[in-house]
Structure formats: C-alpha cells, structure tokens
Image 1: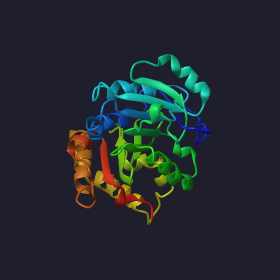
Image 2: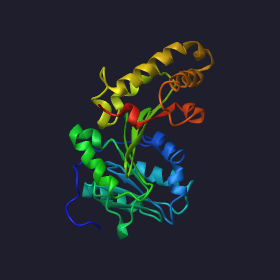
Image 3: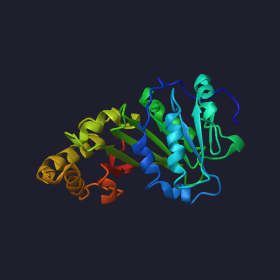
Image 4: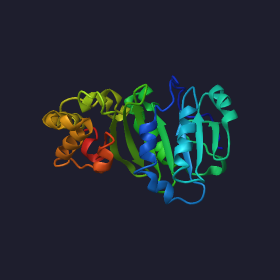
Length: 263
C-alpha cells in the first residue's frame, strides 16, 4: 500500500447496474489485447466506483471471459463505501481505500484503470495532473480510461490514456431513438466537455458526425444501425478513426486523440 492520504475527493457516488456496460464491452473487445498480452494475474482497477460496487462486480465478470486470472480491484476514497463492498470480496475481486495514487497490494501496476464519472466532478485544469498520477502507476502498455456516461449508460464517452499520454476518444451511443450523434456532447469527459464550441476540434468532429447522420437519413429505412454505419463511413473519409464496422454497428466510434484534443 502506498503511504499517505488518498489523493482526490469523494464523488457523489451515483451508479446503477449495467451503467458502464458500454465501456466494459470495449475493454473486453478492442482493448482486450492489453489483458491478453499481460503477465500472470493482470490487475484492473475500477477507480471511484461510487456508492454501490455493482459496476466493479460486473467488470470482474466480463473481464474473466478474457482472462480467467484477472484481478479486479475496486478503489474508493470513502471508507464506508469500501466497508460496504468488502463482503463481496472473492478470488480475483477485492476492494480498498484510495484515490488517484491507485494503491494495489504488493505494488502491482495495473494494466487498466477505469475512472468513470469521476473527473467530471473536478475542474478542467485538474485533469492533466490526475492523468499524470494514474499514468505513473500503469504497467507498461497499460491504459487509463477516463470516461463519462448518462445515468443508465445509453450515452458514453471516454479517453484512453496510455503511459505516454492520451491516444483516443471513443463515443458510444444507443442507436434506438437517437436524434443526432452530438447528443453525447453533454457526456464528454472533463478534458473536452467545455471545448464543444466553434473553433475547437471536438466541436468540428461532432458537427461532421451530425451532418453525416442527417445525410444518411435514407438508410434509416433499414434501421438506425445501417444509418449509423453509413454516417461513420462518411466521416472516416476526413477523420482518423481507429476502429471499423464491427464497432460502428454497436453505436461506437473511436477517433485519434490528436484530431480532437483541445487547442
């Protein structure tokens, strides 16, 4: 355990079952190479999991489909939340008190740190420092996933941050009932949420995605999925997307960070 007071502030703690399923699906999908390539008993940390440990338990179950020997650690600053979760401890699943210093038994370095709906409660100028602290704790080839989603997980966005810095932004949307892709704007991570204004790259990306979605309206006759596929294919001609149709069919699209980073 790292010495000293946990780094960070107690979050509001609101959560619900399946709220983070979109990020879990990405971690068990495109990002699973990090787990598959790690040594024995890779560590994954769910940082700031909130008042209920349900998302930690779900993450453990889903990642065990990738690596049976994965160790998932739920980390929370609030000691009462840790105490409430502790009875759920089992092989490969544990809980402990901590913050952005990411304490893990034995000084192990995590392959993945997921921090969802955590930094949105901080000031924008605090984000880079928090990223740096977590990056310093990552295993080689590890990743911090800094994300935000709505209350039921229908709209989510996250930044993948590697030891050398951020590499991508992922948007994930429930396509049923979607009016326009930029509805996800209010769920952008803290590093970007105040940058959705004219002149900023992320604003231009969402604008182009909306325009492509509108232009692809005829494809809606075959369903929202086909419409989204057509829209993202059009956007891919002008933006450096890092994924392809199998992810787009899920309402997910990932763009290189350098293309949308704040100016």
